[in-house]
Image (cartoon, rainbow, N blue to C red; front, side):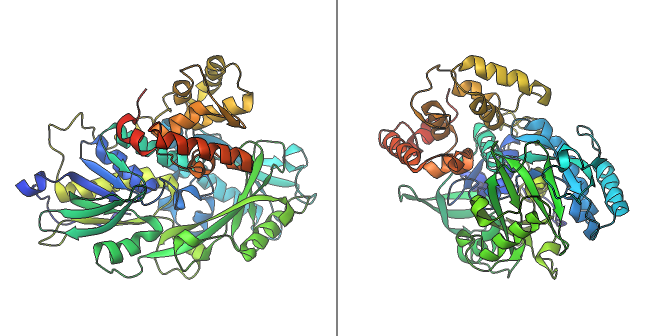
Length: 534
């Protein structure tokens, strides 16, 4: 929710107009990249710095869902659910390759919420956000295939619609579109200090790959550092606003695929929480998440034994075959930077966002972003732009093809220039472009890159095969166009092939990438000169 702004817009002074950038964004997660995309499209001069790989923090450790949040209805957070459901429709339209419809099965647990309450909640969920693309909820018989993986006493339930997302690719695609519209995206760049001046900001930067340092100027700074937002304010900007964010740890486990059908499950637990079991990366099942307060450096977060036991126990309450630690093939954990609203329990803290514009009488403006969820990142960016334009005015009318407010909801993200009904046709085009590829690889390319998969395959020569459908052509694309510099960037964020790659596969990829960077065929040199090049 945007904080009210009472000041009138300021006009840029000569000093402000000569700044390197209009807007400098700290943080390359989904909120930072979403703001950068919107601002660049409107004609602002934009820079973004991320201290690590893009999307490597909270944005890559989500439950991979675009959803309204069914359980938020119990907390009467109707505004958040309504906005999120509306955004679900938008994201299905602008990113049909990485956002896909998904049906969820909710078994009725006789000892928990009554069936009438579930039915009423789903009716509200169907109608609160103006559902257009997805089928409505319905009752389902769990004595058939949908209930086959479950214990026998779960005999009835409900089914409803939401969507899943490749969360890190959503970040990358926003960054790519921002860069294509003129933004400078600086991955692996640390903001050492940001000094407020009367007419703007002086921002000191360090390239963490080369060690090079430089200073740039900007008219306005956006702090979108996620779990590090308080730290950036205190240590980089030099103002301590207290603990504005509540750090909440969420962990997940991944197992081999637990069932054959294409639905996800949502399971109620006796503690009032819910967990999901979701088809993941074609051959796996994702189970999560937890909610526990976290103290410490967000970079050090890791799943605990307690969380692992909680997820195994919660899933085993429903699945016919109990899950054990031996079933886990991977786990991950992230820190959610929730706005500190004073809620008693972590699970009760709002997932809504708060934007605060700091506009001192004699200094440059600063916008702080607190909280939020991946589903509503685009709305957050639009709210941020309203406050930014109020603070520094509109871009110079001579800016290249400025777009109006709301444009990000109408223009497809890179690779998303097709409709969901054309997905099968796209897969056939990819198969025709590379007849030697197996169907799982073709499907993965379509889901990851959309129509850009055809650009990756355009040369006709896939090059070296690193295993499991990862070829040199794709690696080169990721290094040239998507800021990938290390194997983890490719295997765990831009693809999920780390789940199947062997140590030997990974070592071969690492050697190839290191050689490519040293010869200027990939990495930072290419990013400076060849970003988005054909």
